[in-house]
Image (tube, rainbow, N blue to C red; front, side):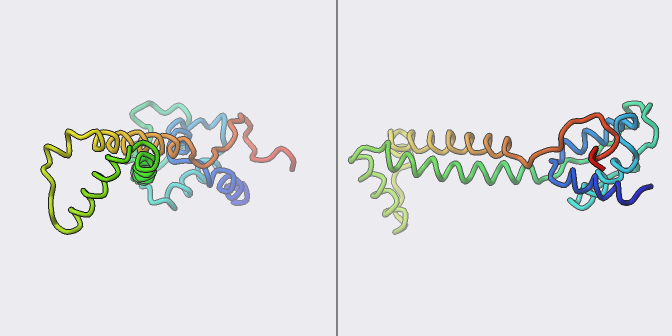
Length: 169
């Protein structure tokens, strides 16, 4: 096995996301990629804490022989963090632009009362327009940020059918 070629593939695919790498590994297309490419994918995934079973060296593997792995929790954490950031931003936008003066007073009274340990009747809060606007800000902001975050993953390598990493050498 050419260790230099493995390192080149590692460098090329280091920024690729989990799902892209697992797709290549499961596909096991030895006509498209050399053994060094699969070794590089395994090294990258192992360095990310993914448990990788032994890779078949033949491309005629049946679906039952394909690699099955438990998905990494990183995409879930990324989703949650982006959702949380978007929810906070959504609340800030609602608070700054969509609450009328009376709702702003209600907002202040609610949070000041909560800070002093005084709870307002939950039924009254849930029925208010202020609550509805805040929930809408949380949901819309959170989902928008989570969607953007999931689509702004690190760039993936180009999808060329060549067996070598660089044509220039």
